Amino acid sequence: MSGRAFLDSNILIYAATGRDAYPEKFRRAREIVSGDEIGISTQVIGEFVSNVQKPKRMARPLSPTETAFWVNALFRLPIIEVDRQIVETALVVQGRYQLSYWDSQIIAAAERLGADVLYSEDLNHGQIYGSVRCENPFRSN
Image (cartoon, rainbow, N blue to C red; front, side):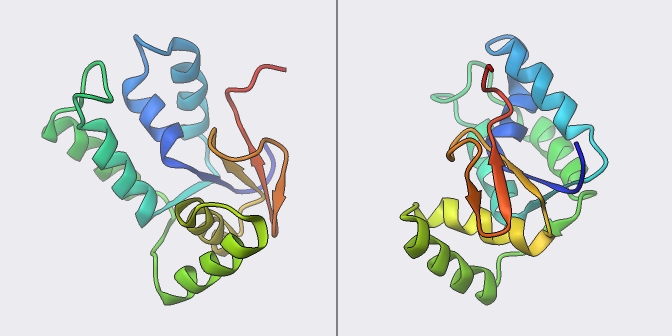
């Protein structure tokens, strides 16, 4: 990977909880998370925490202690805080690409980070949104 990458919450969720249910996604997510040039946003951290603790979504939800361990590790990464400018940019992105607001906010944060790539399985693989190219790292070639 060249340049800086921004991670959507699904990458982190697979890295934290996917070992048994999604071993290939778990392996790939762990590769990405161990990279040097990655960043996230406060939105991504919130989505991660919300999802990894849900028994209906996870085969084995993370305990509060396990979740805190992960969050502490995530706070070591470059983090884009959601502020007024991110919200305003997200609204522009949403209108331009006809995306959900939350996906648009991810793109706005990735752009602020200066990311070349946004790793997500939720957006169109290969599409360029503004200055950021989306890649689904779990997509088979």
